[in-house]
Image (cartoon, rainbow, N blue to C red; front, side, top):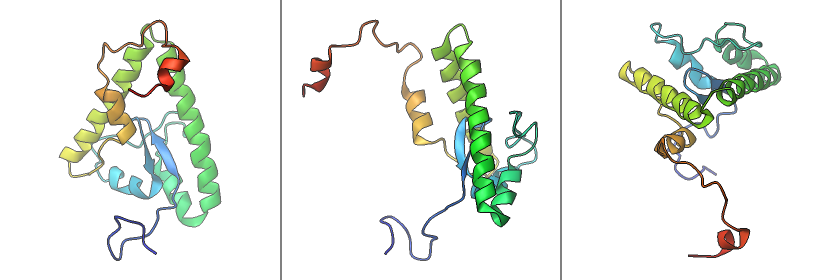
Length: 153
């Protein structure tokens, strides 16, 4: 049985691990990484976390071709190390909300730059949602009482 929205003949599912691509501030399936590497003018796949140590994320994609279990483990270690780096950078900023928004904007711009060079990778839905929130949107100091949150409009 095909999933809804799938064209006949399309692969049913991409089981390759997802990796956080710091330059894009986004997760990408390792099966899609070789397409990103075709653009030699950018260093989109270089990663400076303690796991990758300045290497390319293609190493995880290449590993997934021969050992999916090892690839998933390496992807998980990379994702955790990258997440920690992003969190430290954002939370140590004078204005963490602004730093987060800037990271999201830079990722979206990097995706747009790839698209201009023929590599189609639109920003993810979650990244677009963060960008749609205005730069001056701040939660109120006091959240509404729980009862108000549960009432329907």
